[in-house]
Length: 195
Image 1 (cartoon, rainbow, N blue to C red):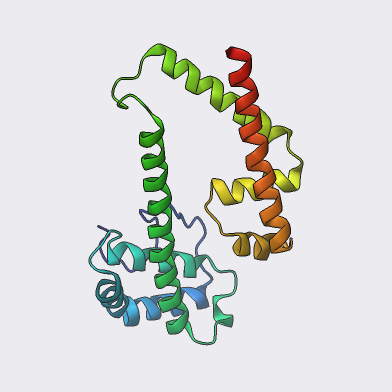
Image 2 (image 1 turned 90 degrees about the horizontal axis):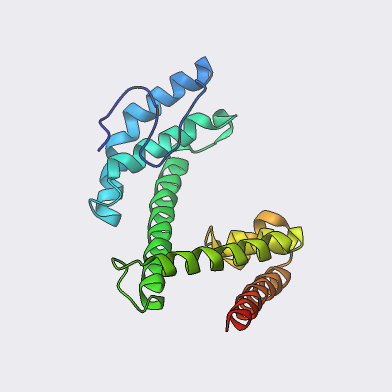
């Protein structure tokens, strides 16, 4: 758990602030931190529970993000911004944990042997299949590869990918489906060659 500090440094969520905010922003940040740190921690604990993630870690992350903003002074309602940011940090954390859990569950279900019993043949087979998928993804056109990675690796929804890239949501969905089919066909072709 991160203790309450008067300066914002690094958080457990991996956000490192390498540059100090301007003097005016630093003073505003100190005031916001002093005024809202405790209430934000209470809000997170009340809304989402004591963790994980720890409310103190979430609030520290929010202030680190706020400090990194190029023009934090342009935010009209910093308290609302901090609350929304804290809410989003927790949601993002749980979304990422769900992806990790789903991946672990899918891997466990796909493995006929317990994961503890990794034999050299199985390791080699997995590495070969991974290499096939990697080669297939690298061979995709840039747009398809980008949206596929955003969806499958970063677990972004089609609408979020569309918003971030400017590509129509239906086109994003089309490319993800086509990319998935490409990967499946490549794996089937490799399996056919082996047999």
